Image 1 (tube, rainbow, N blue to C red):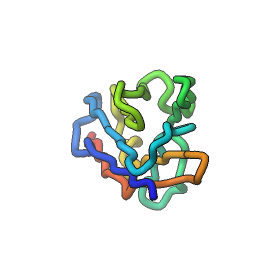
Image 2: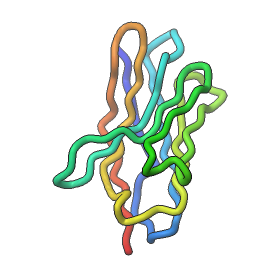
Image 3: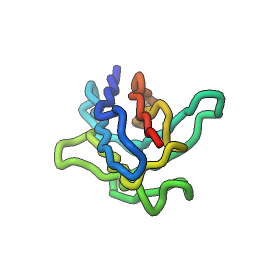
Image 4: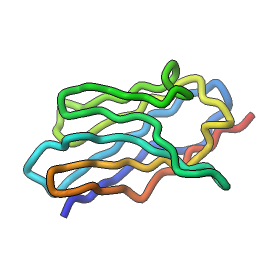
Length: 115
């Protein structure tokens, strides 16, 4: 069973930065894709960014110029560097890890951007 844990959320003023971390444990294999999704109050769950095991990245248009997803040297760990944060970025950010055996989600971490 793969266990996914996020960290790094918090409260930040508009224009500030935060770095989220996501670690997946419990598999001897590397992930196929890991990524971030978010859900704001009253809104649908939405895609933010993904990265493949080969380092290919994909971003939502709303974050493309401001967020960067990357992998750590350690296997199964990814980061989301969020710059120029806006109040509209306020949401619970969840990490998803896709392996050959299945898709796994973390519990989520709250990001709040004050105006």
